Amino acid sequence: MAKKSADLRPKITLESTAGTGYRYVTEKNRRNDPDRLIVRKYDPRVGRHVDFKETR
Figure 1: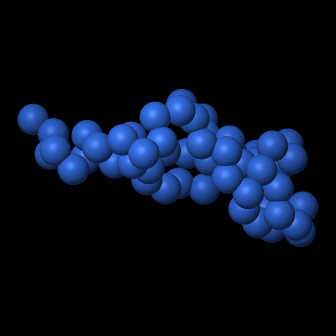
Figure 2 (figure 1 turned 30 degrees about the horizontal axis):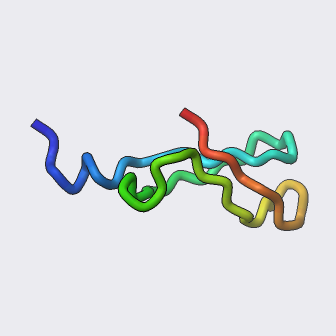
């Protein structure tokens, strides 16, 4: 049986929209963000900030 905190905060993968394939792994709160996340983060392969979308 999974912990209650693990159910509420699953690990997600954020992938760059710049097409580089660079990814971040993080957690999100399902209660606050039930939809897929789009976060603006730094992509070192491009050398600038781009949008990262949640993949499943």
